[in-house]
Image 1 (spheres, rainbow, N blue to C red):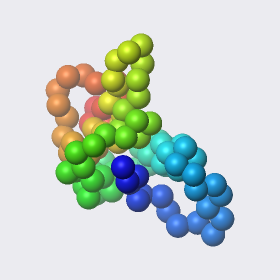
Image 2: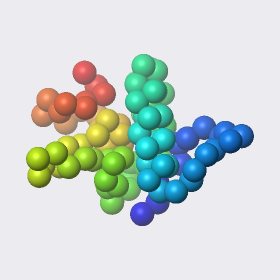
Image 3: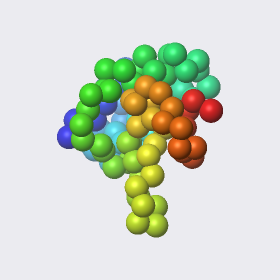
Image 4: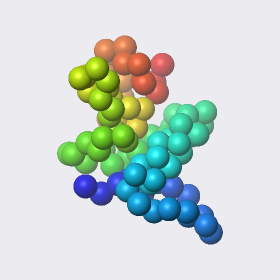
Length: 90
């Protein structure tokens, strides 16, 4: 599975193993949550048709349940109306 290419280019990228990239992508998604929703949606739009979710980016497992992330909701492009914890459209 390919990770979303959304991190800004850096002169010193640090570790680029999968686990570190997922950690950095999650941090970046958290950092952009105060930007206008249209900017967040523009970042996620190229990944709307991704059919495979990536644990740690699109969802987390909590108590045996799949919890969708902010990124997964942004990729959907609109609120589903289920009152999701990580809904960026609130």
